[in-house]
Image (tube, rainbow, N blue to C red; front, top):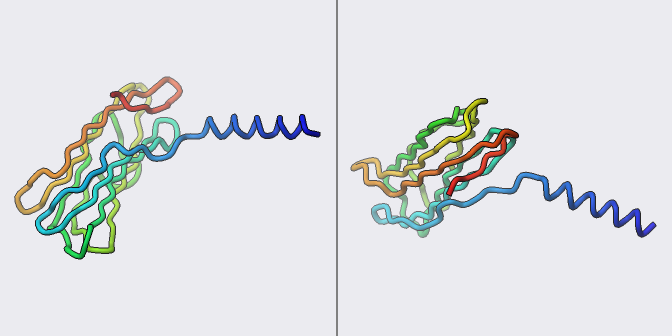
Length: 146
């Protein structure tokens, strides 16, 4: 009985380790936008073979709303499956904003790039610029290129 229990535990842990991991943070910092202090977090997560989700999470510290912001994800080697590569708006206190885009890499492509930018709308002041480069294996696994 104990041997059977150990076999079940071993097979469960092997299955768990083959699962796709969670979101990977590539940028997490606080930026000043006018009078507001904005927490910004950029993550990417492999959703299934040849698919990648990029998220830009924004949350204000304090009670000051941000000025109007513009976020864009410029892509090369990716197709957009869900969402948009453009977001604009304000981040009010206690109302975090999340900008999400699901991307896929077509067959025959083995590298892809996504550039995440966040700008202040009124003067195009660059608040965030992150270039993310990825390699795609034959099995469809997407991994960051450092």
